[in-house]
Image (cartoon, rainbow, N blue to C red; front, side, top):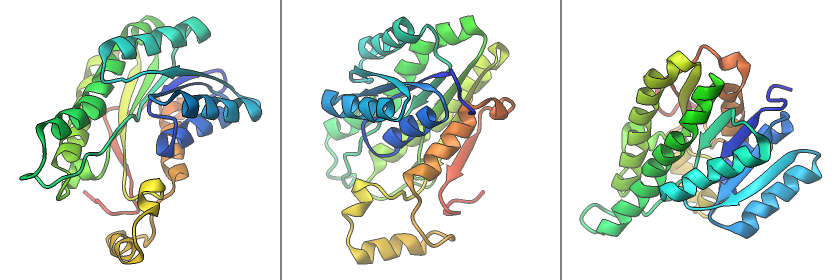
Length: 247
């Protein structure tokens, strides 16, 4: 099993892509720290992992607050003694046209999506440097590469994650710590499930492979980047988007 006995912290792992990453890592033998703002959902994901014979713990918190990010890492270390993988997946949307976007809609999205990733990376770096090994995986989006009307805040946060990823990769490479980003395209989640058929058809028309992706498609890429097989890959943005963005 690719991730046997590795310890992975996955933020925003109570639903959607983050939950599937947590489950996929557990299936591959990792001990998983499930993190999110909803205690009930976090415990439910842990219960699912444990029921399948895996090992998991839940830590509730808001990664946009440095104290919560530090506590997440501290709790993980208290429980498991090491952290091999950090997946920064926590993210929100507050979509609005630029002219109508409130300052708090901008601030909240940047705080959770971008500052949250920084907070967690900063909090885990000392431990990974001490271990002289680590995998940091940031979940960005195709929207951060191509922009999207009504999502100036979200696109800016996800583009910021790409710059953060490359900077961290350069800074920590000498300590055998890699940092990569995964950029999902349109993925089947609760959010896309609520779209009407015409909107879905127009989305699919933009995708060369002609279908929306699954949360498993993203989780499998994250699992590969977390594994020893990806030891020579760092500073990269890998699109899981059916060919939507090329170049």
